[in-house]
Image (cartoon, rainbow, N blue to C red):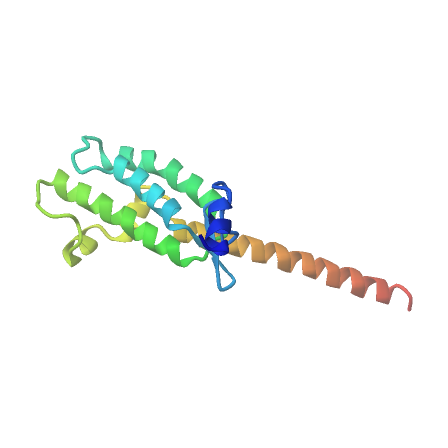
Amino acid sequence: MREVDRLLKATPTWWMPISRVLGYRFEAGRRLVRKKSLMALKDKVRSQTSRSRGDSLGRIIDDLNPILRGWFGYFQHAAPGVFRAIDGFVRRRLRAIRRKQETRPGFGRCKADHQRWPNAFFAEHRLFTLQTAHAQARHSRCGNQRLESRVRENRSHGSEGAGR
């Protein structure tokens, strides 16, 4: 057995590469969501949005929102591209449920379904969207930083003017 192979087999099983930590994956300076974490979320969404579920759309959305809020609370610092994809996945599942409730075949992927139930329709039903939450969180952080820098500027200008 080669020395390298022996060392690799001796590596503890609990060791994890630093590039994958607590559901995140770091690549080219970006913080991304690991595929395993993304699949776990999708499995939870699938379990709540089966087409044969007999609940109203409002009830299903009420059950989905805590899952989406919790996931966003943990992964809000990830690269924003994943939020749009997850929002689209959730809305597609909800459109499929609407089709089933209207006894129409299909899975809610056609353009007519997007026109019949646009994103605003789900917003009216209080669906939590990750993309909107990310935009609000990003702006609130930027707004606080700007406010703090203005306070610093005012303090420095105010102290200069006091000595005149």
